[in-house]
Amino acid sequence: MSTHYKAEYIWIDGALPTAKLRSKTKIVEHGQELTIWGFDGSSTNQATGHQSDCVLKPVFTCPDPIRGGDDILVLCEVLLTDMTPHPSNTRAALVETAKKYAAQEMWFGIEQEYTFFDGIRPLGWPDNGFPAPQFGYYCGVGADEVFGRQIVEEHMDACMMANLKLAGINAEVMPAQWEFQVGPLDPVAVSDQLWMMRWLLYRIAEEHGVSATLSPKPVKGDWNGAGAHTNFSTKAMRESFDVCVQAAKALGEEHALHIANYGAGIEERLTGKHETCSVKEYKFGVSDRGASVRIPWQVAVDKKGYIEDRRPCANVDPYVVTRLITETVCSRL
Ligand code: ADP
Ligand code: MN
Ligand code: MN
Ligand code: MN
Image (cartoon, rainbow, N blue to C red; front, side, top):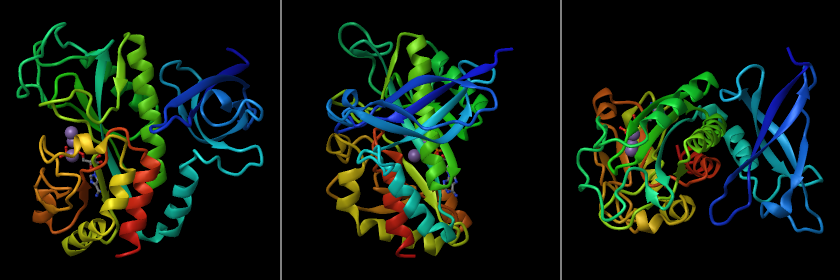
C-alpha cells in the first residue's frame, strides 16, 4: 500500500455572472493533517497577476468515489492571504447566518435540474430540427425517450459511495434534462454537498465526452428551463401547517431581493409558462406548480411539513439561496 494518498482540493472560482468549479490534486502522507493550500487567483478571476495568490481552506471532505481507496475529495473555502474570506466566498456569510438561527433547526432539500450536452446540442437531439415535443420524456423509459442514463446511474452510485445524502433522481420534461435531489440537511451541509455532487456530475460526464450544464434556459422556445427548487422547513413548520403558510408569506416580502440572487438568466426561465410563475409576480398555493412557492398536497393533508421555493434557477449558488431563505424566514417566524 502506498505511504501517501490523493486529496482532490475543490473550490468555487470568481467567474461572473455564474461561478464555476475548479480542482487540483495534492499528494498527502498518511497520518498527516490536511493543510491549507494556494492557487493562482489570476487564472480564476479571483486576483490580479501582480498579487495572484489565494488560499484554499478545507471545510468538508468525503471519500473520492472515482479514485477509490484512501483518496478523498476536499471542498474548500477561498481566503485572501490575510485569512479573511475572499469576496467570491459566499459560504462564510452562510455559516454566520446558519449559526444565528440554529435554534430554529432549518432543513433544506434542493432539486438540482441539469441538461447534458454533446457539443452544441443537447445529448441525443437530432443534427437538424428538434425531437418530438415535450411529453414522454419526464420519468420516461426507452431509447426514444431517455438520453444519458448511464451517466446518471454512475453519478448516483458515486454520490452514495461518497456518503453524500442524495434523495433521488429522475428524468425531466425536456429530453436530455435530468434532476437529482440532495437533503434534507442543514443549510451549510446541503450546500457543501450540492457543490460536491455538481463536481462529481461534471467529472463523470467528462469520462463520457458529455458536458452537463446548469443553464436555466438551455434551449429557447417551447422547452422547459432548468431550476433548483429549494424545499425547506424549520422545526416549527415540521409541526404546524399555519407556520408553513407564514413562511410562504414571509418569502413574498423579499421577492425582488430573492429574484436578483436566484441565478443569472432567471427572467428567461420564470415566464409564467413551463410550470413556472412569472418573475414579476409572487404567489403561493397548495399543489400549484404555476406558483412561486408550492405547498405540497401531503403537507396540507398532514397539517405540517415543508414548503418548496420554485424560483431558484439550476445555476443558483446554494450558499446564497439557503442564506437568503434562512434570513428571510427565520427572522419573521
Ligand atoms: P418534487 O415533488 O417537487 O419533484 P422532489 O421529491 O424532487 O419533489 O424533492 C423534494 C425534496 O424535498 C427532497 O430533496 C427532500 O429531501 C426534501 N424534503 C423532504 N422533506 C423535507 C423537509 N421537511 N424539509 C426540507 N426539505 C425536505
Ligand atoms: Mn423533483
Ligand atoms: Mn424537476
Ligand atoms: Mn420540485
